[in-house]
Length: 188
Image (cartoon, rainbow, N blue to C red; front, side, top):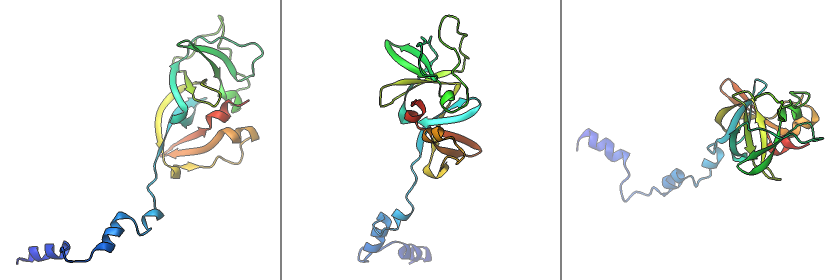
């Protein structure tokens, strides 16, 4: 038998050897595999508001739409821009900048005298408990995958109302994403 064959013989198990413990170890039944589970990344839709990167879980997004004409609702709450007609479905459209304190009040974007929206602006149609609702964003950046280890709790300096809608800060390389709870961001 050659030296190479001897090395292979030492490397591989013979049919008569008891290797049950090694097979269990390889299958992860010894409990060690549960100590370091592989992190499963979650997908988020990243978008821009006032030059900052925000994101919501992709599962909360129904679709992305160009900004259609909006109909203003008199005496509506400050963050409600109006309603839009999306293929026959009337949806409320919100500006979360007001809720997040990025703007004093929602800009006038509805009505016949309203200026045309910026070309990069989009409406994110989000799934909420009360039904679909639109959120005005300055632009959509794309989908970003973040593992749980890439998330940090929101900073302590947030105002009381903002703590509810900012759920975490996502860090991917040099980029930071402010992760929002869609339900809370749209709450009054």
